[in-house]
Length: 323
Image (cartoon, rainbow, N blue to C red; front, side, top):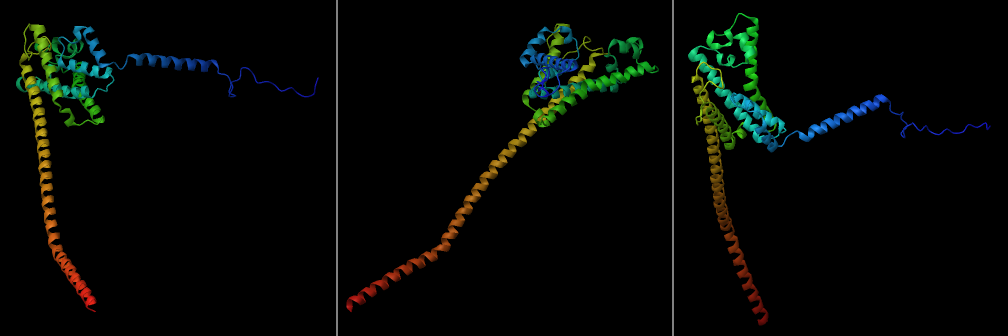
């Protein structure tokens, strides 16, 4: 036996970089990360959806999601369409802002009408809550049979919840989309596009036409009936339609006023530029004439000196010849 110790070879289980081999916990961690990546990859294959793919899916959805539902739910479905397509459709985002503002104007106009004319504060809201909530806060679960329960904590809680849902479903969602619009560099003026105004109003009229034909077999642009909303009378639709029309008239007037101002500004710039060029040309002409008049005596003097010098040279030549 030799006294010297033979060099030991590195263990086969050691990593090339000198680290210890991975344990079973590390293997499970790596496996979890791989599964997470595979899941994200699978989701990424389908979302966000192409807008055409999302439109192709819509006819496959059950009709009860759209028919005899409030126009607010159509607004919510439009928002869902915006989200499943990636939330990057700028035109659709502008559409949602105008549509949400339109719905809020019409809805709260109906609420104000019921309070002013019938002294019923938000009865139209409570009467269109889910049946489980109406059973707790309305007498016999119906507004027409007695009104609101106000001496029951459960009823008060459901009334409060109704107002929270109302705010979330109408102005708050609209404000959220508007904030997204502003964060992307959008302005109020960029919302006032003719295609946006026409398309949002057209969808509103399509909603009325669809429900009027579906429930009453008639063709028209304004729906009046009891099939969609639980209301005491259909007169509440009139202030909603008036507020909606007034909203669009205000937007159109703003759009026309802005276009007229822009036209006047362009015309003013054009006229101002033309006057400026004309004045500049006249100033240059005056300056040229002034400089020419200032230089004329000098030119005449130079010409006189030239003639005198020539005559002196001739006299000198004659004198030389005489000598």
